[in-house]
Image (tube, rainbow over all chains, first blue to last red; front, top):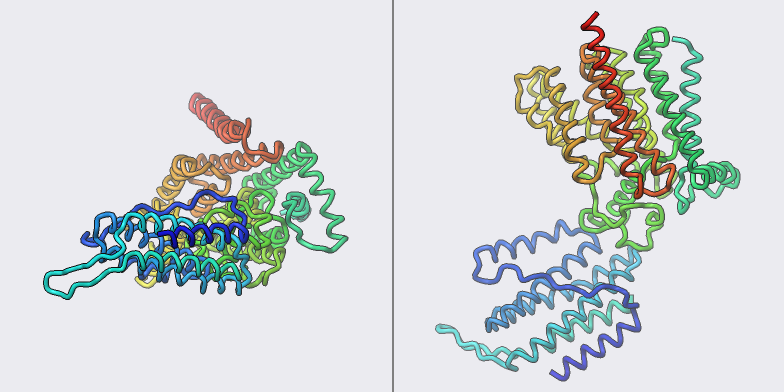
Amino acid sequence: MKKIIIYCLLLIVFCSFVIPAVRADYVLPYPSYMPGNKLYKVGRVIDTHKRFWYFGSIAQTKYHLGLSDKYLVEAKTLFEYKQYMLGADALIRSNNEFNEIPHYIAKAKESGIDVTLLKATILDAAKKHGEVLSLLDEQLPKTFLWEPEKEKPTELKLHDLLTASAGVRIKIVNDIALF
Amino acid sequence: MKPFIIVLYISTLIVLTVFSYGFIDPNLSLSTNPILIRFIEPLTFLVYHKRPIATILFFIILIILYIYYVLFLYNPKYGISSMEKLRKVLLASATVLIFSYPALSYDLFNYITTAKVLFRYHENPYIVIPVEIPNDPNLLFTRAANKTALYGPVWLAITAIPHYLGSGNIWLTIIAYKGMNAVVFLLFAYMVYHVTKSITNVLFFALNPLVIMETLVSGHNDIFMMILALAGLVLWKNKLVINNIIGWLLFIASWFIKGATVVLLPVFILRKLSLHYSLFIAYFLLLIVILAIAPIREELYPWYAVWIVSVMSLLPIDKHQFLTNLTIIFTFSLELRHLPYMWMGYYAGVGPGLRSLFIVIPVFVYLVVYGIIGVIKKSS
């Protein structure tokens, strides 16, 4: 827990030097369909195929950030309902989407676009994600043993996952600060 | 037709072209040529610092253009008797006005910047707004840069032509857009002649000052939507199946320019209606959109009248004298809507009230006069 708080504080301090903060608070979306809902799978298919509509570096950045936000909210909701396995899966997806962002910011910069605003948005998002992750770390058990009836039990290291997720955000913010 | 009238008419268009450069956005630099700058400076001073005088000048130009219009349309003495002569007049008009500045609206700059988002930065303009590319120089003189693309994909595809022809130079790009508008304007005029075989109908469309101002000066894209929709309708009424298919395709393509022509769906579905009645219904359907729906969405913009003028130009004008005159008066009153902003420099205050009055008064006066004349005729 302390680690995550320190990470988040470091992130905020570091970023406040890099990018001037003159924007409104970053807002995460409302939770969408959750696993178990009939439309959940449809939503996931649409999410995947929306990438073709979001062509272009800025649009791709928005696409991946949007999905990262969406899956983080999904993870938070699932964790709150003690659906740890599904929540962990959603959080990993959120991390993966966040990981895609620097590539597209670099591409945007290569094509001559001033990426200052884009970087600022990612920083805001990372801060917000950090807040959610640290809150979850406070609320969730450090580990959880998932014991399905007919399968082998799985130990979920929730604290490690949350710490790693915060680390992903910090790494990305550090990476894009260099652009 | 007396040649000096034509010379005077073209001269008025040249004056309009020169005058239009006074409206250059203060943040836009078209050229670094000192001669050109010296030429433009007094014009911008007039428009931005002597607003009442500039407004009166614009009003005078507008009145002169409407006088020519009515003369050419109704007075056989000044009438253009052959298509050959008319072609020359239209070519000369279009050529002169291609070089005018889009004085009365910023929409052309929205088209240019949206096309740039797509073709220069390869971003989806329905997702990415121009202000998300903060270092783009077009932001200095583009309004509505905080909106995603406002028009359909067919229009975006068309804008590739002027975008690449302009090759990054803003002035060349403006001229390329205007050139494209001029080509479609001339094509529409040709279509009117082809369908109606009437020079009067071509004159009604192509010399209408609102059509000239909004299509050739301001460079609005409404004419693209209308040429596709009306060419589609004409082909749909044709006997050949292949023409019918092309007609529908053109009609659907028109939806994806601006969307207003969706309301013409009934006239396409009611196949048995003659072209005449289809156009007649189309006129009223579009008029409903202009008067009822468009003001709810934003406001009643003058260039929407291009829709009804283009439909009217395909109808037998002599059989619809009342509607023809009403359309002319309506276009005149809509052009007057430019005056309050030109005079004051802002949209708020008394502007909206004045703009509404400018529409209501001329139309109301026409209806009263028409009614009185009707009563006198009946009684005599």
